[in-house]
Image 1: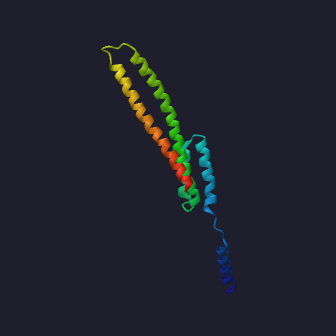
Image 2: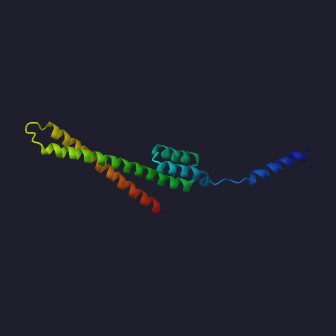
Image 3: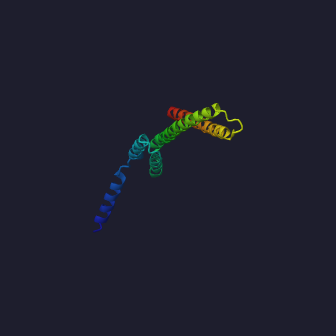
Length: 147
């Protein structure tokens, strides 16, 4: 009995020392691939949540986290590009409406003209902001890929 206990402890110690640690980058890779797939399917919120979950679950997977930053930036870029396309379509429509109102003789009835002009002005501001956001994320992704 006295010989069995030290032998059992020796076996346990040998087993503990030989256990392999799994690479966290390899374990995080499927989550990163899932996030990319969700991003391509325009499911941006789920893709963002997947990257965030990967960051929390594998805090030491530094390569995967670096790639996760690129995925997050790509998500923001694609979402901004989608918003820019929608805003541009609305802007074009409202601008045509402003042109049609401005061609009419509205002497003394300028309220619709100025209302439409304000709407087009604010749409233009939003369009410019979204364009700047797209340019920012394009540059950020380019810089992140360099480093």
